[in-house]
Length: 506
Image (cartoon, rainbow, N blue to C red):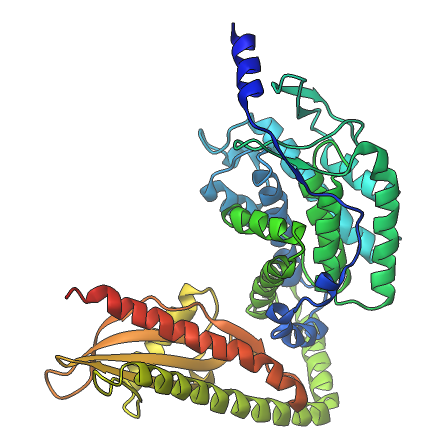
């Protein structure tokens, strides 16, 4: 009876085939993609990377945390297993220890979970080794990578001719021998590359990648294209998503960037961007990958590298100090040029931000002209101590360090509505953590009380997360970050007005 019902349901379902695969190419749509989401911060990371020693304890710990995060999340989004947020954070910080697991933390046997996590970690660690040893990118390498991540996975999900789901033996390190076209709940069936064309398409993928590298296409574009091309081929019976993210990571790591990790909370955005790329619109996918890299760069820039006194002798510390003083001396002339460049670009950023906010005020005032003069540049700031404390809380909320004496500019916009309702939008510009060459632009929004003649904050509201930009660039290149700042100012004012509108109930 059950089998009859399943057959009946399958026959009634209207199957709509969605062709995903067509012979891969690096098309004009990809060539024209902007990488600005990453470009605005990349120079700061290039400079910071030059001062880091790959064998330093702090840097190694940072990279190990990224590897563990990748190992966990790549299996979660593929539904290989579930893992609670709490133990996820513990595993990222401390490592994969089975005794940390409690009842309900995962949906599979703990020993099986540990196998999967260790296999995923070994795979991303292997990618780092491949980059370090400058190994050639080949089809056989891709098969080796697949075999590594599926070492403890023996089956994959398939369907019989009636549409019934079943588990079938997994081919490890071998291309698929049967179609692997998933069917969604709405009956849509995604058609990937047929098995007969996989070998030719994978050879073509390797050739196109080599050509892109030779032409020095931006690494972010290369990594994003490679990920998408691999997914539409879908060469393996299972594990294609995990391998695709490893291959993208390989390109990024090779160029001094970070592994690609898609977190479970980003899965919908990730899938939506992939589907847009399927339809010839890859910009959203490039933007998403760029933002993920930017977040890792922000983490690295905000990392304070300190000498481990418990593991260092007096002589070793003296040698470290001598080395740093000599390096400081040798870079004095370079430092002077760097300082001038930073001061010049900072002035451009501050003046441009103030202009953008003034333009927004003017634009809004024209819309509200029949109601009164509501929007104006404010020359009445909040108390300095309160402002600095608010910025410090903002930085803490967004996981970076704000140093009070590194505050550069606070630009206020006043909003005054009928019935003496006063607001302030603050656009703050300051150094991001310990990096003099990186700025954070933040926004804070306040409701003010004027009953006693002074402006006193009554309530502060949620605001847009910070925009981080590098200012270690030549004058002709600094203009490239201005559109991002203008968009940020617009987003900050949009959120502020939305908050005000939500409080008014006529």
